Amino acid sequence: ARTGVQVYTDERGNVVLEYRPPEAVFAPASLETLGSIPVTVGHPPEGVNPRNYRSLSVGHVSDAPSGRRSDGPLEWLDTAVVVHDADALRKVESGELAEVSMGYLADVIPEAGIAPDGQPYDAKQTNIRFNHLALLKDGHARAGSGARLRLDGNQESSMFVRHDDNTSAAHTPKSLVKVDGIDVEKGSDTHISLLERAIAASAKRADE
Image (cartoon, rainbow, N blue to C red; front, side):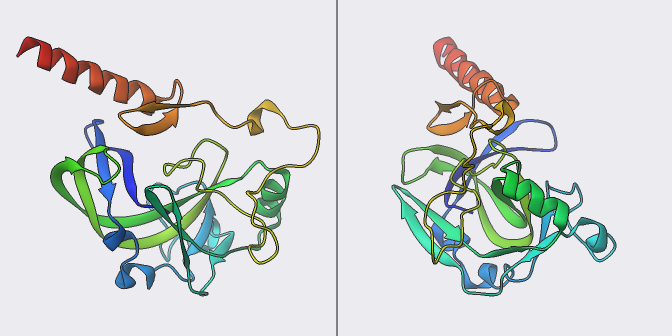
């Protein structure tokens, strides 16, 4: 998970840029909800609850203290993940599942502004409460390609990569473009939505 602006879609299908400030991402009350949450393959639509836990969980997040690192203007939350399901492990080891994404609840405050790195936003997140950590294919993490599995952190600091010569197109990193300062997958629905938003804003300024 990271700080900064991320792209979401509201219940009406509108693109909303939400800012995740450091004081929300690294709040002690939020981090207390991170340990032992289930690991899933993809995001379950309703999150993980006592009724579906057995069918969805392929592992869990460690109770070990999380780490904090900086990458330019962004700050990242790192944690240890335990995967114990055979099929999920096979997909991790093959590189089919390489990125991660947090499933969580948060209070979203409608409040337009400019993040410290210069990106505009429509709302701000606070009171983040984690529900699960999802394993995803390359190019699917909302936080960007930096949200990915790594090899055991104490022995190897490089990103998780495949080392065979038969990497298929499905495992090739997606082409990213920057729209309003945000990296998105080229040609994705988010890319198109952000472009439409920018065009509409430009047209409005021209009309005014």
